[in-house]
Amino acid sequence: MIEQVRSYRFSIKQIFKEHWENYLSRYQDSLRQDVIWTVEKMFSCRSPEKLGYHKYACPEHPDQYIIVPHSCKTRFCNSCGKVLTDKWVERIENDFPPTGFHQQSLLLAGQSASSGSHYRRTSQCPSLQPIDSLPLSIPQPSLSPDEGFVQV
Image 1 (cartoon, one colour):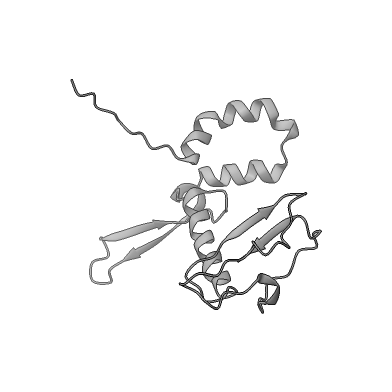
Image 2 (cartoon, helix red, strand yellow):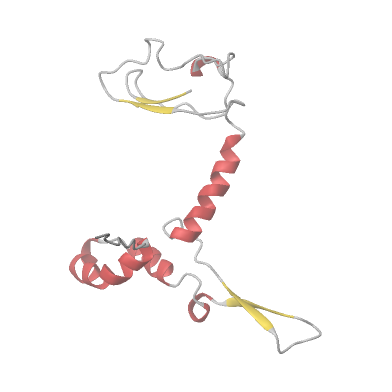
């Protein structure tokens, strides 16, 4: 006998809507007001009666129109946060050298990046250099040499 497995998709918004009131009643005193505001704004995302909308109509047929609701534009929202993340990635891609890949490694205290293993030469990119000698415009963090991010 073949058993059918169903897949359910949950969104962060749906999970918050189901549990937010209970969580808020328990922890409202310890939550900052901007956190509460951000979650409430996420609930209002693309809701014409809460955030407003634009109405587009054809000049020849004014009775036919489309309503486009406004979004919340917060990083916390699934749909708005994705758009903002994509725009951020586009902006910072220009700061990286033109290679086919990028790798980031987190070094914990006690590990050393000075062994030369923090970069690799591959046949795909023979001119890959250690991060120390690349002319990047990314500000270098003020971490000790044994901890932080190493980008290759």
